[in-house]
Length: 317
Length: 295
Image (cartoon, each protein chain N blue to C red):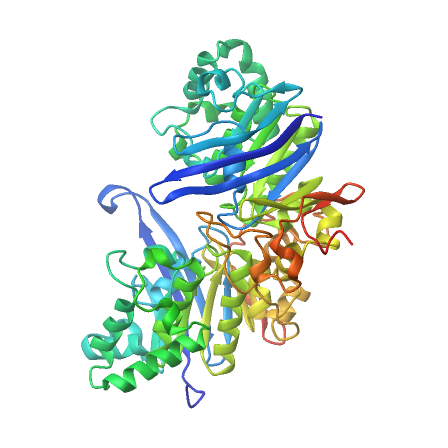
């Protein structure tokens, strides 16, 4: 088991109180697994991704543990975590396209970054060239400024850079969202290739796009309002979703071939609850067509079939 | 909402050349080249292309936010670029746009009601208070909003989907005939974006003509009657949506379709390279009923 997350809680401190963005999540990611993390804006998926590598100033660790390859990560300790970042846990941040320093040439930026980790740029250079070539970039890119690259090129540079130290865990946050469909496919397939070549052991791919996850992920974990909703192998989750939220979410996605005149799709009525003061019980119950009396108690995230987990009283049956 | 069915927005051989470099002294970029198509009442036309294909520029030229370099855009038989003063005001009373980012379409300092009040001041100054409130209520109802839920609120108190629907209802207040919808749902969540799409579908059924600008082929297919595919500013294929998607002829359209991630089928292992160079003298050829392909 590469990554084990146990009852992780991360709140945002605000003047109005704590925003419970991540309210007790427990899951694991195995060696070689690409896990998709899906959900709508504000469900806590980005908070989860960031928590595993660096808590920013507003994020407060309220409880829970995370271990990677059997070693417990000192999440709350900014300095102690530094030893793990980049080498063991790495991230391709959201809007990675603007993550590159605009006043440094790509090569110099990478060299400075490696320097800060005590790694020699000169020794890494052959491997860097090999990996750039793998994603279709030539060495000349190292002499360019970020502004001279296209969005897809920048995305690929960040991918290569983030995985240069062969981390155990890579977190890719909305890696493909800002890209055109053709570039999106190329970048998404890169994630699989990097795993297959052993550049990263496990990957968490954060996105709102379930269709992209179905293409590349082994498993998909769906979140809603700071809680886990369902986790299953990618094919099973998209073919046979068990949690009502997952079902409605998948039902609202138009496939190529679906037409409004033939089959009118429905969205999900209502809005997610405020995480300042979330309701007790199941957080989806106000919007759920299957909600019944028992939903005022919080459903546990349990195994409902081999390899399948869900947090719903009705899904367990 | 609308009567008659003859008013058409027509683009003919529209070209846009941008100058680059400081003070426009550098090279030129052909953003849009020789684009010809029209939008009829009661019809949704999807304008599909990747970033840099010129799709937003086409929408902006229709809304007169950018002048075309060559070619003409006519509405109801009149050249849009010659409109000024009263004529232009009337044009904006019939042709309106909604854009990608609902959060930056509002001034955060004012309540959202202000977008309605500005329309009233400019276009409906003679309408009485009670009639105005009734019109506003109906326009909100058309997009599935309750007046009590949204009026009197500040933009940050509403969701992206609500803000986007408010902007559509603002356009509806004026009995518009053509709506340019530029990526209006790409910032919305999956569970709410389909509702906004359905609203466009309903308005189409009542006679509105919509130019639906998008990079998402699945959405374009779900909603539109006709589809126009842009590549590097040129139309490479256009025709009835069902025909183009069932039988894509141009290599670029095929490549785009093959790259769309689906929930039921995996990507095949083909490459994503731009399938071919632009022919030296490309022309649109008819390959089927109203179905054109650049050859």
